[in-house]
Amino acid sequence: MKLEHILLGTLLRQPSTGYDLKKFLDVGGRFMRSNTTMSQVYRVLGSMEERGWVTHAVEHRPGAQNAKTFRVTDEGATVFLDWLTGPYTPPSRFEDPDFGVRLSFAAFMSVDQVLRLLDIEIDARLAQIARFRDRDRSLTWDTTVPVDLELGDLVAGWSHRKGADSIDAHVARLHELRGVLLDRASSPAPEPTSDRADEATTPA
Amino acid sequence: MKLEHILLGTLLRQPSTGYDLKKFLDVGGRFMRSNTTMSQVYRVLGSMEERGWVTHAVEHRPGAQNAKTFRVTDEGATVFLDWLTGPYTPPSRFEDPDFGVRLSFAAFMSVDQVLRLLDIEIDARLAQIARFRDRDRSLTWDTTVPVDLELGDLVAGWSHRKGADSIDAHVARLHELRGVLLDRASSPAPEPTSDRADEATTPA
DNA sequence: TCTGACTACCCCACTAGTGGAATGCCTCGA
DNA sequence: TCGAGGCATTCCACTAGTGGGGTAGTCAGA
Image (cartoon, rainbow over all chains, first blue to last red; front, side, top):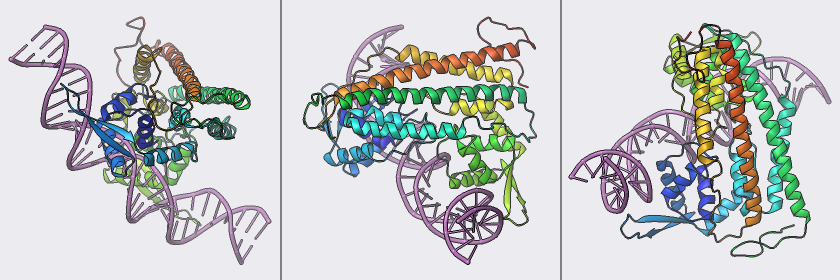
């Protein structure tokens, strides 16, 4: 996950200052990234501005420090939308934020695009399950330091059960969402709820 | 998660070649890291060798290419064990591999050390739940591109339910393991406090 | 009045990780 | 015999991220 894309999507939803972005990443967007620093946010903002993806306007806040409000340019929007609707290659860890980040920008996508994403993710995880479930997990030990093999086995067994359950739950949830979206896609197209352009919702 | 620590732990379990390490990361250790490249593995191996944490012996494989078998030095073992049993600061995403990686090296720890780790993780996740559960998640939209707010809301609701369920399941599992370990630990020394195994005894 | 928290921005040295190509040797199957 | 694919290593240019520092103003509390 590139910070770039997260910032672009967040700014596209709502123009804001670097500080606001950092706050968002710590709270509402905390599932997208662990421990993002201020410097990282400002540097990415700077480099995106150089490339013309965002611009800033200085906002004079009487009785407070001036603040730069960043907004995404048309070019930046194109870059973001290209990434968002472009090819998704599932990371090997399903817990990685990539998929969730993309989904969190679902409002910028069509139902079909979200369904495509979902299908790719489902296929990838089913393939992983088929490939790795019930595989021999025993490890060989050849070490000079003292080890507690019994403790290791105990914990490894637990980890394995936990991992298997989590990926199963993940897939089940994906199917659930898929079902809901399929319903929505097959019913007569609902009114677009955009606050601006009105031809967004139904590219068949 | 530093690749360094993963490699050190893996080599400490079983000396191996760079290639083997990469294979391990793709299969048995796939939950530790997504998409690790060969170059990354070899470069880290090189830098660790420079620092004296690992050494290699050239293994002549008759009828095949020579292979470097890396093993951890005493100094490397110390570095690894210091990291493993040292302070653990939970990342903001509980899905991040940090905790799982440490646990996967449980055999190098004492039951008390594992319990300490577990307690830190449990406390951190409970704190997050207390802080963020049932918080207002509504987002403001101020954008120039067309959006499907209804789709966004639908997906956001799903994501939130999924996230809440996952963290609850995570905590439940942690408690489960904690119970098992407390049973196991209750033979050497009686519990000082009722609820929590604070006050670690001697590391094995 | 001082302290510390919060808003807001910027900079730097450094480390970690990506992506891809190149080398060469092996085995196995078509 | 040819090529696909596994084993094993290395190099290189590049981008991303870390961890710390600093500046500066506001505001509330002690």
